[in-house]
Length: 178
Ligand code: GNR
Ligand code: NI
Image 1 (cartoon, protein in one colour):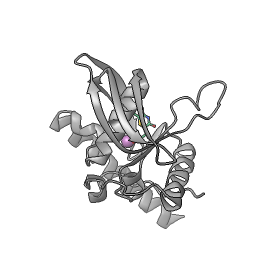
Image 2: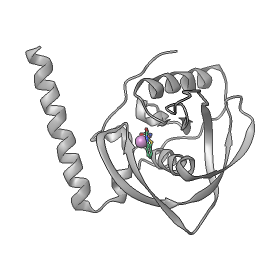
Image 3: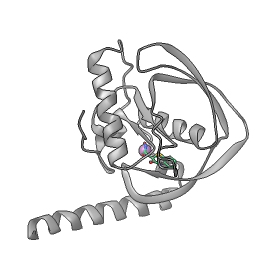
Image 4: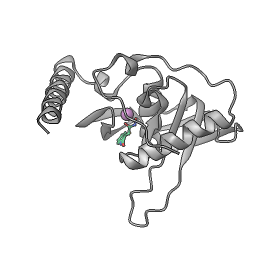
């Protein structure tokens, strides 16, 4: 188990289309363990493998661990596919570990159903609504090289990317001084 570095925008790696996993074995489970460690440490409620530089169709998620009880309920999705999504949309204020400290309201289908392989490579399905549905769709966008800011107007997205570049430059400077 290890905490890996999360790649932030702008970075071409985040635009890669992730490839399907052929077999869920030890190596893939180790990747999922590392992803979960990295996600809890960040902290976040979801993480796609491409965010740590591994363009494979693997997602980990835990939308409940930051509640009062703090009980961990990790979810693992390998090769997820959306089979059903509702016409009606819901709006959430989204953030992304690859777009640090930036938030925006995004509309997405309110409910969806997905097929996937679980941690043990077993076929499974899930009906999701609310934050879970939003998070799954956010993570599945990552597998296609899409970030939540791509759902915004060009002007809003450009503003956010400019800010990210500026703060990245700033923190580089500070590292040299220190
Ligand atoms: O931690 C995260 N929070 C979040 C909030 C609203 C909608 C989506 C997310 S996912 C994000 C972690 C992340 O960047 N996953 O890719
Ligand atoms: Ni994200």
